[in-house]
Image 1: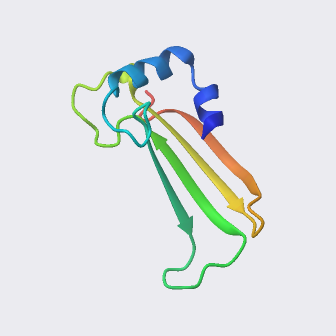
Image 2: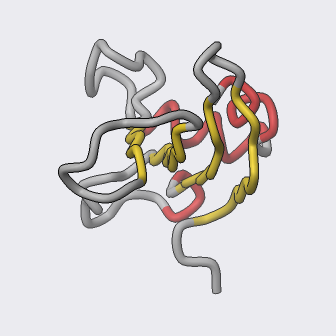
Image 3: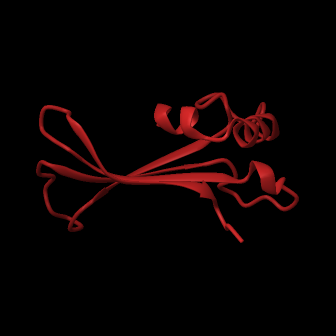
Length: 98
């Protein structure tokens, strides 16, 4: 997700960081990161793991949240047993681009 921070347009990232200031300690910039392991429910985990990660600046969809600070990025990847991460797809942009 560090790549996401670097890749975001500086003004949009700064706006999202300012809007989320003080909204949590886990990710001081105020973003939420969700990671899901894909696969059959109830089946044991096997490698490579299929991962989906999403970074959001406004996960609660707060009314009045500035549009220029409403950011999301998504990534699909695989992780091998030795921890090697291979990105399969990456998307960066506004949550609801018009």
